[in-house]
Length: 379
Image (cartoon, rainbow, N blue to C red; front, side, top):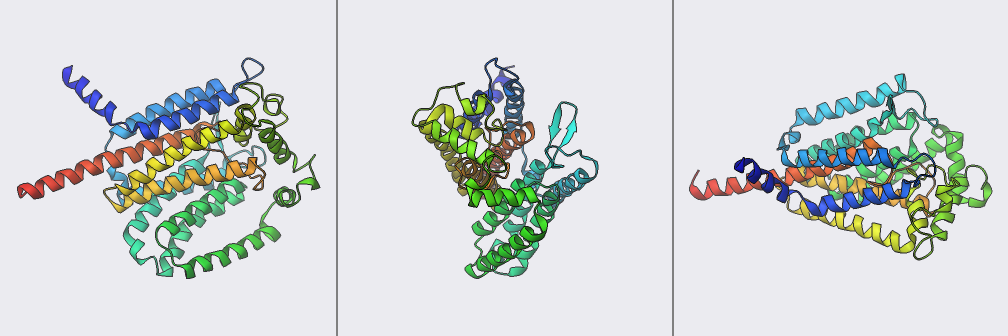
């Protein structure tokens, strides 16, 4: 019994609280924002259950030795499963809000794109950990791009432009941290322009083109495709300095702002907490991101560093795009914000990723110390 308590205490103390506490705080603030306080159906109780399960997952993963995920067979299996599930969506899933993006299993919905994010980060981390010194070879850019494009192509077909942009940002971000040259960066910019032009004339749905037009000219259709963006800006602006108070957000609680629990929870939070509240959640994200940078710098292997930075890029892209949409700086694409938005699959991914990162940091350093000790003792 004493041995068990000692091990539990040792593991408890090792949990990376500078990662876990900001994430839990952000999740609780999201739950508080989506709560209706008895005035109608609330998603808060279900989200609280998902939060508890996600925290348990973090605690379990952070204790286990997960260094086996560095192996190529594991990485490719994960990638293959994610690719298969995304393709299966297009065959068996029923459209929800016009997109085949979720598997519905009774009251539980699962979005394979969340698993695909983990798979892509692991694959790129493995690929770049071996070839980042050769990134000047355009062949490696093209091969890594094909891995990402396979996911992006299937996600665009769903259609889910928000996640397509997230995957594109993730791949580009990992290319940048690998040391891509300015010449190749300019080439990627040209390719992006060509792809965007092709999508505009042949790939985007009419409502998606209308959203972009409404972003360029917000007053063009306030009652139609520009409605959500207009209401989000009203919500953010009406919060002023200290907000209207918890539970008193009229744009969200009176449902002028659609999907305020997911796609516009930043705007709903800003209305109730004001600019002071926005600074608070941005500080929480900054604390979380700073800790991820510290872990990446101290990583035992290149894979661990790229894996950690991959999730830093993923979280940053989600925050920037979601907040930009709420502030009217970007077209509406339907993107969640990490830890705060309603939904189980993305919350499980986010806490699970933090657990894997903690495990790699813990066991990687332990292995490095063992190696050093063996060398010192002549082992």
